[in-house]
Image (cartoon, rainbow, N blue to C red):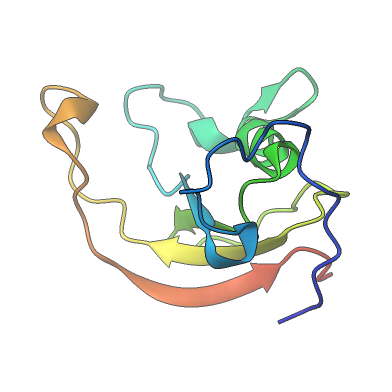
Length: 126
């Protein structure tokens, strides 16, 4: 694991002593879907929004919050590792996900699909 080089958390970000230290916490960003509800040549999570891929937006916000030491991004199995945004100051790992069957009834039915935890790329890798 690379040394902790993150900026300090914003003032008041860790307002509760019950929150674990960021080095003991990770965030998971699901980006392994096939985008069947938004058809097109490019999966939804990789489409551009405000000049950058859609999945870059939550990565940047999570990193800026300073509450986690690692972000795990689930990407589609067999896909080429996408480029990651620069300057996140947290460890980012890509994990191939299974995607699961299409939704029927929305996200409230909970997560599905298995997937395999194969780390394919970390922030800073070329």
